[in-house]
Image 1 (spheres, helix red, strand yellow):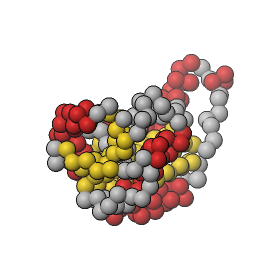
Image 2 (tube, one colour):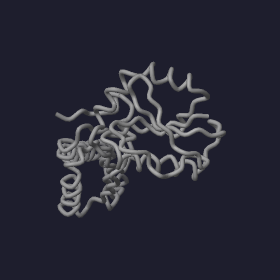
Image 3 (cartoon, helix red, strand yellow):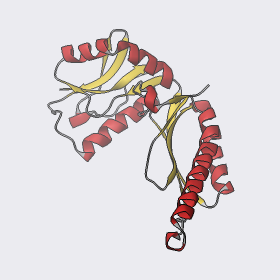
Length: 223
C-alpha cells in the first residue's frame, strides 16, 4: 500500500523520521504536485494509536520544512501508483486551491463554555415565563458567541464553526497566518482574563487538517 501524508510546496528536504511500519518517506511528482508518501504492507483496515501518531508526526515535520502543507487524512492509502495518480488528477483543482488556502498558515482550535451551569428554576416558573427565559438565554449565548468569534476570525484566513456540545458557547477552528499566531494567542488570553465566568481551551498550532478539504459549507473565508 502507498500511504499519503500530504501535498507540499517548496519542501526543503524529507524529514529524518520513519513512516508507517518504519518505511522510509518518499517524494512523488504527480500533475505538478509534490506528494510525500511511504510504502508498506499495511492495509486500509489496520488502524492503531501508534500508526495515527506516526502519521501526525510526519505531517508536523513537513510543516517545518515546507511553505505549504495540505495534510491527508490517515486513511488515505492507495493500492498502486496508478490509483494514487488517478486520485490526484481527479481532485487537481481542489488540491491547488487548498494549497493556496493553507500556505503560510497553521490551525488553532478553540472551545468556550461557561464555568457554572445555569440553575434549573423551571419548577418555580410558568411555562410561558420559562420559555421566555430560555429564549433570552439563547439570544444572549448567540450574541456572546459572535462577539468572541469575530475578532479571531479577522485574524484568520478562514474559520470553521462546529455544533459541539450544548454547553459550548463556541467550538471553532481557525486558519491563522503564521505572522498572526502570537497575536491570536494573546487575544485568546485577553478574552479569558476579561471573562472569568468562561472556560477557554485553545489548542495548536497544528497542521491545517480542518481546512484541507474545500468544503464551503463548513468554512468562513475571512476578508
